[in-house]
Length: 286
Image 1 (cartoon, rainbow, N blue to C red):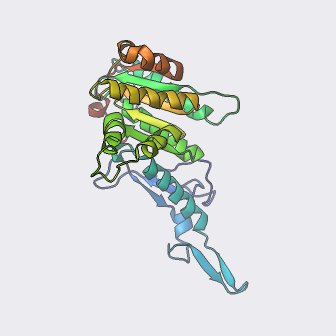
Image 2 (cartoon, rainbow, N blue to C red):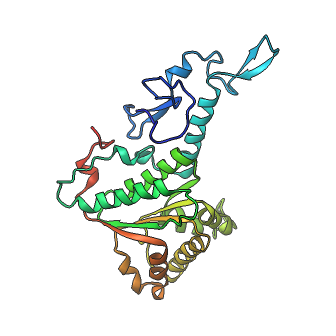
Image 3 (cartoon, rainbow, N blue to C red):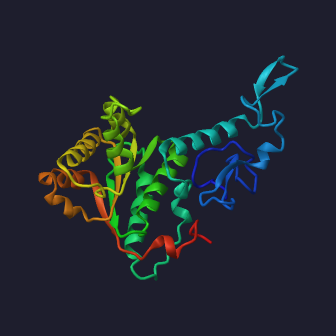
């Protein structure tokens, strides 16, 4: 799959029928993988004298010095995308999944909510980085398998492809609350690192909090959740939340403070469609 419409990168041959000038492409049909892998395009690799060995430099006798190989820029850009996706912690199932590879059957029962959310995601990506454009986060809620996590991760993937944005995906209980709890244990490698952990969540440009509200409720947990979203709100960082519960359920939690902040920072969208994961193939276009 060529990535011409997903990234401004142009390090390949403009006339290449495979990568359309990007320099690398996404190979979707990979054994034991639902996400695919990024590969250097043959329009760059076939004429590569460095053999793909870092730092991708070759010796030029006429100038008596090392010069970047013809593959250098394409490999560096490919590596940057891979690095940002890995650093973001996007689950393998959703890695490199994008909006244009999702099947949108407008006649399917209950699919309206997914299409509306898909359109919101598309506009968010299109408007990212525009001056004087304050973007609103999203609160995607619905039943298991309704496509919430898929959409949230697609937004991260496209922000990385299009803009090189630093993003982070996290399960609210496993990756945030439980990690903070571990920092309280003296025998843990994370002991004493509570503030460092929190900073990773508050400072990243775009954060997806998956399964928001799935944690066991307590005053401590509610306080941690409020502090996180409040800090991100104050710092004007984009936050996307997925949940099985409607935002109104937060009215009775933490004295309504979490609900109030959510309504200020994220647009609620209800995905009421049947199980998207069961009704679609791995890439949604096959």
